[in-house]
Image (cartoon, rainbow, N blue to C red; front, top):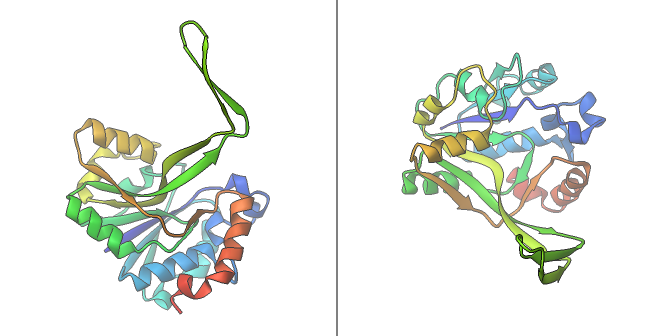
Length: 236
């Protein structure tokens, strides 16, 4: 199986660190987050990885080289202009069979093989790894009749539950026909386009460890988690 890792973003929410480091190179313990992901992919049996790069791409190319140190074959697809999360896929060669796409700034213990097996069992064109997240509203929430504005309920600081994308996707190659070449195109737009076309899109519920390292708070928490579960992340 071939994998594509999206590693071209500027990581503005982790500034100023990402002024000099691409976000996938941010350190988790003594490893860049992307290196942990590469090791996990190699253990899962993935042989080829394309890094879709942009911001500070030279640092990633110098560090990961051809991937042989991870028993991988790594190549690079350089974005000359921002293409969104799905747009770069239109320029990547070799996506002729079921393939994996993921963000380059994720720390998780997701079993990639189980995700792929689920995808094939559903005969889906797209499967999205998903995780339950709870958001606490720190205010009193008013329920009301929208026509008369009469109050019908009052909830103090409720929790709201959402099923969110983990940034891991499995695709069939026919998905590429839905992605315009050279245009900015995000995954939400792609998924909605697939649904409008009547294609089968599934979510894979995962309740194990997952953190998106999009902000400083999650990044610091991920470093603590890594030290406590190091052997699980690195397969030692």
